[in-house]
Image 1 (tube, one colour):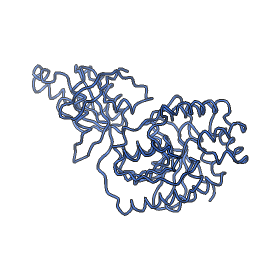
Image 2 (tube, rainbow, N blue to C red; image 1 turned 180 degrees about the vertical axis):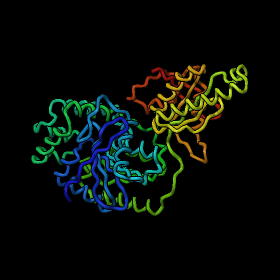
Image 3 (cartoon, rainbow, N blue to C red; image 1 turned 60 degrees about the vertical axis):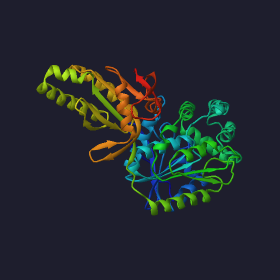
Image 4 (spheres, rainbow, N blue to C red; image 1 turned 120 degrees about the vertical axis):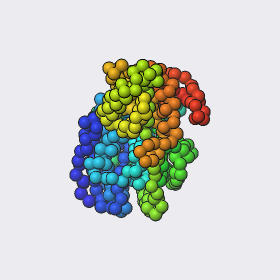
Length: 443
């Protein structure tokens, strides 16, 4: 197989994301590799080339360089998970993949695949993980990460330090072959500068997508090798995704799936996908950010204005709401008479929409309060149902005039977006079990 042609998909923020498509299977498989990536140069390494060709036995394969490394655009600052998930969407759209198997390696690949699968289950055939953890860095791993950062800074792209880096990223077999070390050093230099890779490693360390695992409702396979008892992060992933299947492969000292017994790993994946084909069921539950707003003191305002003027005001309110929701790529579900219900596939856009709407409504003489929550919803007819809808409504009811409140889930998933939150404490939400930690959006 010749090296596939590299193409570019344009993400929503204008970034260009490099991708390749190869093979002609009747299923589409998106493989998101660990951060060691360069779409074209990896084909020069026989184990990776063999691994890529083997996947074409059962799928048309799509690969991509994550933003920040390889042939994709470099990034300023640390992009949040929502932005990086949009890169996946852009690549799949460009590749013409309407329904896709997602296979992600490591915490970074796992995070992208999980967020996409929970948000767009109708576009996902199945979800698979390779040695993926739901958090990038546990507290007891900080010394190891500091050692890796130091090695990256002093020796990125230099042959005399590349073996050390390969051992730190759990690829000792590659570190033991001088020719592979020389080739890897060259790949490192082409992947990006030391600053690019240090920024990517920081982003990796800050990954935490544990809160969305219960909202994944697509067939899921969690694969990992026995790492001498260091398997708790991988087992956590399997135990918190409903219905997930876990496969523990024999012990191996190498992390990359193209090393060791690759055939066994691909056989497990192919078998799982065959079972999905036989048993696939439509899922109507999705992960979304729900936004509720309402007009403060609407009853008193309506009484003062009178029925006719109030109806005119509601029409203006809804027209403004639809325009602003559309601007932030949300879906205006319905007006509520004195507010609105909208959904978004990204929590940061929902919060920014709420902020803009609160400010814009003042021109109509209206004080608005808003609340946002990311959770499961069910589409039915022209309306929504599910606990996520009820939580968002209760969060909105807690906000004061011109305030936007958010659940802790929204806060956690918008890390890196530039939004600022103020702790509003624990609250009981009417009709909803447990106490909920809420936050005011302050910037």
